[in-house]
Length: 443
Image (tube, rainbow, N blue to C red; front, top):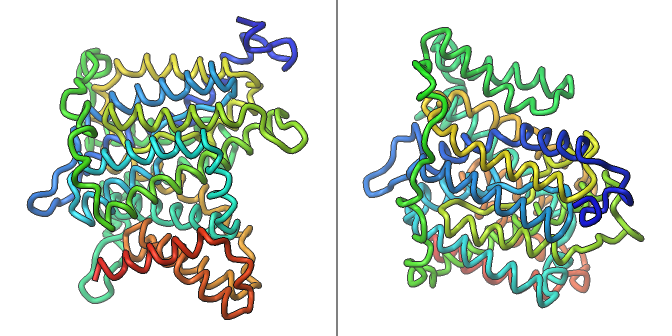
């Protein structure tokens, strides 16, 4: 085992790798409860004909997808990178595709499955790099920031801190409501934890918020061990549903959905792998060793997750927490995978993880994703315009896809007007046409 994971070459050991795996797991364990809330559209007044996914099945699918993806990453690619369903893509899946477009979640799962298969094929054929390189770095940064704003907006809305208003569209919520105050407490305590650089601060913030809710009577507290540890929820409501709705994918709208799943996973994975490898000192001549294996591991996890019944599974930037704790090998990811499997037996806790408890996690993740704002070249107007529309359109239209579409439409226009048409990759022109058709279809 030590030889396979190259402990001696990497200067690590079992104790350090276990602590690193535990640290990463705690830093991202919030997804076990946020994902079922999000995909289940819990606490949302649903229009007629729109349904959310079964939270129990999503909980199981989330834990299994994280375990499978992390095992693949750890054993095959040998990186200390842990995977799980991405928060941004879960929000896109639930609030844009299902709630906004009215597309059944079963069809959306088919879209996730197809995007994962495309990701595998693009990686194996070498086209992945060409597509990634065709998209300007500024737009990649803008997409990440826009998703951060969108996630934070969803968190603030689900907490009741931001509410709808017939005159101004949105307004500040009622801070005299106990549920709103509970969410505010969660946000504040989470900010305290992260400011003090406490690993797993988001997860600990959720725990303390849930405890505060139980102490104040806002959340029903567990009445016995059966309310904490229980049997694994059945996958029956979601398992295999992605296979039965391929006929519904052949529309411009679903094409954009699949492209969005694909693009965002591209950005998340590439950025995370480089960040983790750089921090761990694993880069060689500014290149990522075993990059192909890592990308196949990530895309395979998406395929597995879609079959199980969850949104896109991707590499988590929280893996840097485990690297900071000393993780250097794939054994870190293997440890985290084992902890996700153990977590399957704690599904009864879903009953105490309410929208007010998960909202702070969404807000904090949104803040962390928006830190790339300063990396955009705002002093270049031809770059500032598409970046601006990419970012603001996501929360204002409640759609990650629309934000990406607006940015990718404006970019060729401003660059051509600036006399820089030759700097635009042909793929960007192709995407320009696709997104124009998307807006025509929406109208």
